[in-house]
Length: 115
Length: 112
Image 1: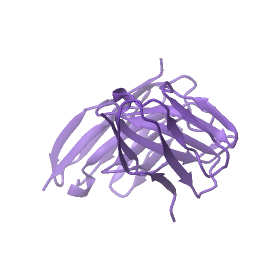
Image 2: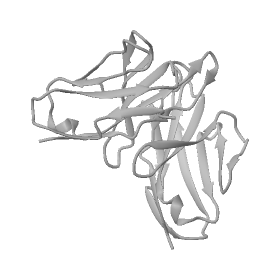
Image 3: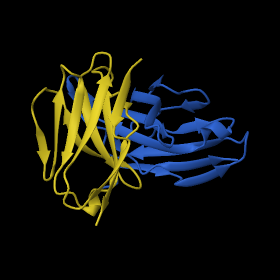
């Protein structure tokens, strides 16, 4: 009954460092998403994927990269961490087939601070 | 530009009160509106609305969508301290599953 699992839960980075936020889901969902949540700003879509091997930019993709080599995993990569990337990051997944779009299920988030 | 606006930004009520949270949207090719509850961690799904005028209910929570006026409300009756959370509204187009635009959320605090 794991759902969407994100690691790590917390991380502090120095400016210029790189890291990968991991996300895996065990619900066989075809769609996966990465969001960032800043205080008072709601959730902003960074990247999304409609299936293995297919990714696309969301609203705020600059400074991030993703890959989707399997259905289960959707890692988010920060190459050169900047203070503006301090945020809480949420991964989500959903099932979509034709006109049947199911709600997104979210992981518990990764709190990232760039100092 | 697509946008979702929630009001109020925050409110404080006492246990037993009824609250109404508002969500207005302007989203290209709108298909569905979703409500989520976020406590300390992951947003958890409450409702998905696709048709106007049809109320969805789950216990003390209910929600309705007006596609003509482009808004939705979430009602919580007989509030409890466990209802304290951020309530997020999101609206999405039909393409690529639920590519959602989120509002900033309403912070609800229920005092005992």
